Image (cartoon, rainbow, N blue to C red):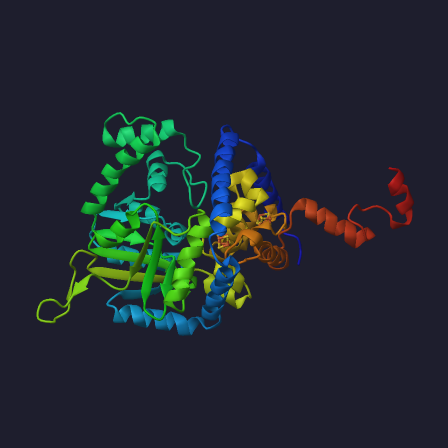
Length: 438
Ligand code: SF4
Ligand code: SF4
């Protein structure tokens, strides 16, 4: 493969740009580290309460492996069971197809409420719906302040940790039209008003899923705030967008995913709310006839998203698809702890580079920071699914070179030196003794 010098140099410039410390960034990194320390100390405590954490991790790996090795079988089973439960199921090959499906389901609705969802972020559903004149209200507290202030998320679990209480207060004072003091409880109370009003008036609620159980067709979501429960029940239409890798074989596997997501993500023994949704709200109370739509959603639409996942599987990247999106790996990643959200390609961290290269292409991952990974392997230690993101990243770097000729200029120099002189310094091998002197 010949060197793609132009793109490689561009990638190097972008990495240097990301390394530049902008005003306020040190403060942001300090906030991220505080959150990481809090979660780590909670985890140290709560892990002692779990009888066998290693068995939990193995159970998740077994469940994910089983589905991914028999993907068509489990996708078909999950879809059939969900349809039996009166859900409508759609398959989206990529983000564009998923967005079009959502647009059709949303129809003439003018207000949509949404909960935190990686799959939604992955396909850019908020921007897409807004570009079609539809108002989308984020209902997760941190996502809402990020939306109101037009900020960037900096962490998958606490995306607004970098925003000062003064700015939170400013955002919700503006939204409520009254002075909201910069205090956590006052801000929480104030945020509830607008979000609750939007949920009550919205025609459509969009959520992701932590797991989809193939044997029962049950959608599982885990949360602390209670907004997902409301978003999935109050609006007449509930849309679920989930990667095909969220499917697990059994209810027990789904519970393991729910348990591990909070244990590893936030250091909680279990999420405050765990929702099991097996179809729209229904009853047979009146003459044993099934009628739809009481106090929950009348329609449940499930979009199963591929978006590069099958290709990753075909190319031997099965382990990448074990990801629960818990964010635990970031708590040990030296790159994320130095750069924050700059170390991302759609998703955060090394695993984000892996997903990003299949969703947006290897070239984009190369430009966004594929080469930042130090290959330390610390992420695998913290991961509930024991994913070695470094090995995946290493493989994608190989692809970047072999298929696209992408190699950072300093790496290219080392390569040329080795080929020319047999050592990375480009020094004469006959004069090894003299290297010592210099
Ligand atoms: S191997 Fe890479 S992604 Fe994993 S913790 Fe180390 S630097 Fe971060
Ligand atoms: S790679 Fe592991 S630790 Fe990181 S987000 Fe995915 S499941 Fe969590």
